[in-house]
Image (spheres, rainbow, N blue to C red):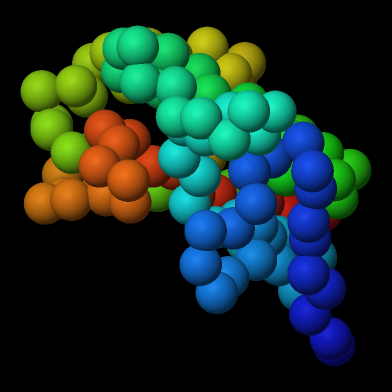
Length: 126
Protein backbone atom coordinates (compact mmCIF):
# COMPACT_ATOMS: atom_id res chain seq x y z
CA UNK A 1 0.00 0.00 0.00
CA UNK A 2 1.35 3.41 -0.93
CA UNK A 3 0.44 6.67 0.71
CA UNK A 4 -1.25 9.35 -1.37
CA UNK A 5 -0.69 13.04 -0.68
CA UNK A 6 -3.88 15.09 -0.71
CA UNK A 7 -3.73 18.75 -1.63
CA UNK A 8 -6.32 21.34 -2.59
CA UNK A 9 -6.20 25.05 -3.32
CA UNK A 10 -9.57 25.33 -1.52
CA UNK A 11 -7.75 25.03 1.82
CA UNK A 12 -4.67 26.88 3.05
CA UNK A 13 -1.31 25.67 1.84
CA UNK A 14 0.88 23.98 4.42
CA UNK A 15 2.94 26.47 6.43
CA UNK A 16 5.66 23.91 7.09
CA UNK A 17 7.05 20.59 5.86
CA UNK A 18 3.78 18.65 5.90
CA UNK A 19 0.83 17.79 3.65
CA UNK A 20 -2.76 18.96 4.02
CA UNK A 21 -3.71 15.30 4.30
CA UNK A 22 -2.45 11.82 3.52
CA UNK A 23 -4.52 8.85 2.36
CA UNK A 24 -3.30 5.40 3.25
CA UNK A 25 -5.48 2.49 2.25
CA UNK A 26 -9.03 3.35 3.29
CA UNK A 27 -7.93 5.99 5.79
CA UNK A 28 -7.38 9.73 5.40
CA UNK A 29 -5.36 11.66 7.98
CA UNK A 30 -5.69 15.44 7.85
CA UNK A 31 -3.10 17.77 9.24
CA UNK A 32 -4.32 20.29 11.77
CA UNK A 33 -6.16 23.19 10.22
CA UNK A 34 -6.20 26.70 11.58
CA UNK A 35 -8.42 29.62 10.54
CA UNK A 36 -6.56 30.78 7.45
CA UNK A 37 -8.83 31.92 4.62
CA UNK A 38 -7.36 30.16 1.56
CA UNK A 39 -8.56 32.93 -0.77
CA UNK A 40 -6.71 35.71 1.05
CA UNK A 41 -4.13 33.93 3.19
CA UNK A 42 -5.39 35.97 6.15
CA UNK A 43 -6.31 34.62 9.56
CA UNK A 44 -9.98 34.80 10.55
CA UNK A 45 -9.75 35.89 14.19
CA UNK A 46 -12.93 37.96 14.70
CA UNK A 47 -14.17 35.52 17.35
CA UNK A 48 -13.48 31.95 18.39
CA UNK A 49 -16.73 31.00 16.62
CA UNK A 50 -15.59 32.61 13.35
CA UNK A 51 -12.22 30.93 13.77
CA UNK A 52 -13.83 27.53 14.28
CA UNK A 53 -16.12 27.96 11.26
CA UNK A 54 -13.08 28.72 9.07
CA UNK A 55 -11.22 25.69 10.43
CA UNK A 56 -14.22 23.48 9.63
CA UNK A 57 -14.52 24.99 6.12
CA UNK A 58 -10.84 24.21 5.54
CA UNK A 59 -11.32 20.64 6.73
CA UNK A 60 -14.40 20.33 4.50
CA UNK A 61 -12.26 21.28 1.49
CA UNK A 62 -9.45 18.86 2.37
CA UNK A 63 -11.84 15.94 2.87
CA UNK A 64 -13.78 16.80 -0.30
CA UNK A 65 -10.59 16.55 -2.34
CA UNK A 66 -10.68 12.82 -1.56
CA UNK A 67 -14.48 12.57 -2.05
CA UNK A 68 -15.22 12.55 1.68
CA UNK A 69 -17.25 14.65 4.10
CA UNK A 70 -17.80 14.83 7.85
CA UNK A 71 -19.93 11.66 7.80
CA UNK A 72 -16.67 9.79 7.03
CA UNK A 73 -14.81 11.22 10.04
CA UNK A 74 -13.83 8.60 12.62
CA UNK A 75 -11.68 10.65 15.01
CA UNK A 76 -11.12 14.34 15.67
CA UNK A 77 -8.51 16.15 17.73
CA UNK A 78 -9.25 19.69 18.88
CA UNK A 79 -6.50 21.86 20.31
CA UNK A 80 -7.54 24.99 22.20
CA UNK A 81 -5.45 27.88 23.46
CA UNK A 82 -7.98 28.35 26.26
CA UNK A 83 -10.33 25.67 27.58
CA UNK A 84 -12.77 28.45 28.51
CA UNK A 85 -13.60 28.51 24.76
CA UNK A 86 -14.69 24.84 24.84
CA UNK A 87 -18.48 25.43 24.81
CA UNK A 88 -18.32 27.98 21.99
CA UNK A 89 -16.02 25.83 19.84
CA UNK A 90 -18.10 22.75 20.61
CA UNK A 91 -21.31 24.47 19.48
CA UNK A 92 -19.81 25.40 16.10
CA UNK A 93 -18.13 22.00 15.70
CA UNK A 94 -21.40 20.16 16.44
CA UNK A 95 -23.24 22.14 13.74
CA UNK A 96 -21.14 20.36 11.08
CA UNK A 97 -22.28 16.87 12.13
CA UNK A 98 -25.78 15.39 11.98
CA UNK A 99 -25.38 12.14 13.90
CA UNK A 100 -22.95 9.33 14.58
CA UNK A 101 -20.36 11.73 15.97
CA UNK A 102 -16.69 10.74 15.66
CA UNK A 103 -14.51 9.93 18.63
CA UNK A 104 -12.72 13.04 19.86
CA UNK A 105 -10.43 14.62 22.35
CA UNK A 106 -10.14 18.30 23.16
CA UNK A 107 -7.05 19.59 24.91
CA UNK A 108 -5.74 22.94 25.98
CA UNK A 109 -2.25 23.69 24.74
CA UNK A 110 0.24 26.40 25.63
CA UNK A 111 0.50 27.80 22.12
CA UNK A 112 -0.69 27.13 18.57
CA UNK A 113 0.75 28.13 15.17
CA UNK A 114 0.33 31.83 14.39
CA UNK A 115 -1.07 32.26 17.93
CA UNK A 116 -4.55 31.07 16.90
CA UNK A 117 -7.13 29.93 19.42
CA UNK A 118 -8.16 26.63 17.81
CA UNK A 119 -6.66 23.93 15.60
CA UNK A 120 -8.47 20.76 14.49
CA UNK A 121 -7.26 17.59 12.77
CA UNK A 122 -9.27 14.58 11.63
CA UNK A 123 -9.02 10.95 10.66
CA UNK A 124 -11.59 9.72 8.13
CA UNK A 125 -12.40 6.39 6.52
CA UNK A 126 -13.47 5.76 2.95
